[in-house]
Amino acid sequence: MLIPRFYPILDTEIAARHGVDVVAAAEQAIGAGASILQFRHKANFDREVLDRIERIAILCARSETIFVINDRADIARIFDAGLHLGQDDLSAKDARIVTGSKTRIGYSTHNEAQLKSAESEPVDYVALGPIFGTTSKQNPDPVVGLDGLRRLRPFTARPLVAIGGITRENARSVIEAGADSVAVIGDLFPDVRRRATEFIARLSL
Image (cartoon, rainbow, N blue to C red; front, side, top):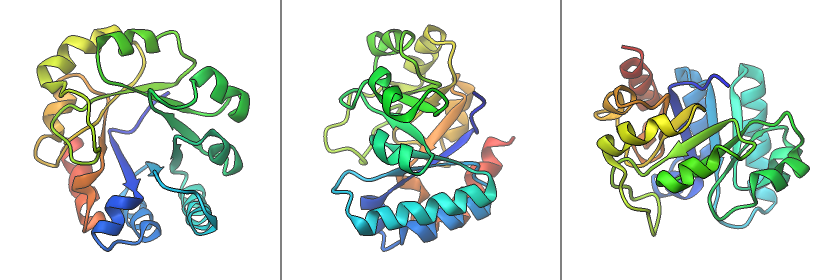
């Protein structure tokens, strides 16, 4: 799987904190040139949330943007989206029973043991982090750092997405340390279009 260097994650809580509508954020990110987009929602999936997902799925389909749902294999199946799983979520093997064999699945890892273990999982890419300190999680794992990223990169042959505390200022250094892509959450807001444009420009150098 070829994965875009810029991987924006639309976290509904963070978007709301900045007063940004998540559907509008998706439209702005796509308009700036994002070719992959993840929807992350840690609360209840009610009808309003499902409506937002549907609207984002339509935007992604129209622009041929890869759409990924965080955590929920059933929701990913409904909207024909990719799926991203964490260490405490449904296993990738079980998720494939729900989604089918063609669904793109990503898998979060946080250390050497998890990264090595991911090699036996039926996933298309792995995420590693937090690379830097992050405020997007209440109980973040220990920081990996750029040196850790360089050390751990050889342990997987799959595309590697770095995540955690990545900003416009440090994104390029993460790619240079071995990541194929950078996942961005907090530094995407509040001006999503402008910031996405800046990320894409800096990662294209």
